[in-house]
Image (cartoon, rainbow, N blue to C red):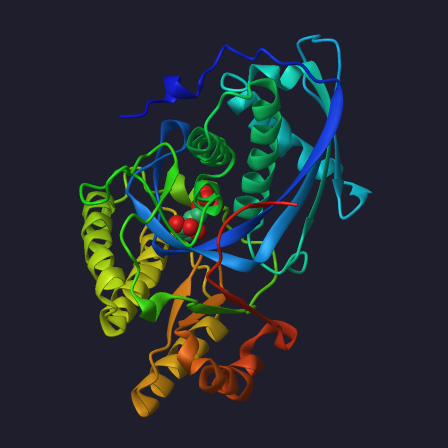
Length: 360
Ligand code: PMV
């Protein structure tokens, strides 16, 4: 089994003066949710997600050799403008990964980043952002140590991304990714995300995700605080074992193409995630009245038309509407006709399953 120590290398034999890389990395949407973590971003339960295609972060990393004075040195640009308030997060990320990337203090970096989705859309950019940065860092590592394999490159990128933001480790690869040890998923690990190892049924190829932007404001409770509230949570142990069970079930569903069962697991997972928030101490609610309006409309539409459409939720009020590609026209018509009115400024984003991070 791969351990943390495998990501510590000493053979950085090559040298480089300056250069730059550019990577894009997508967001992802969990089907079985990660909620609760142990020390060092180790998940309390395994999770599985669809990698998205259109919602992504594009990050350019410029680097110039400097004297190793024991400090990290970097500038940060967001959409071309200096962004001081993002810097502490990057500083913390560098500190966390330094053990695994000792070359980070040998360079001055310029991190130039932008998202394809609207700023403050309520879509978390930490997953795509940390994944894009981790890919760039691994490109630099590959220059310094050209012997690393492609497998190691992607595994370590996911490992580093996880240390930035847990779910970011699921944004490196596509199209379905598992993160966290699970008895039935070969190669699964708490340390990094792995591609779902079985063949995915055609029903789930090109699955669609339309993200309804219900509330674009800042979350009242960050996911870091939310994860922490699973410590001593009265339902924690039951929830963690339920996630293992749901991952076993969804594995069969993705192999067999059983969309009806998929809907049950995915919606139950979304509501369980929010139930955990409502039953922690202190308790909190991230859904908004319009989140519930949308859920009820989806249920009504599904009952009346037998269209296999369902919802899932992140740690926020926005609704991800999931459906197979062959009902796209019908569902988009439904969304435009009946759901857009519940979105802030009528905004929604059409996305679908994607392939993971790409070098530009
Ligand atoms: O990666 P974090 O710490 O932002 O946590 C994300 C947690 C959820 O989005 C709610 C669920 C998940 O598995 O992505």
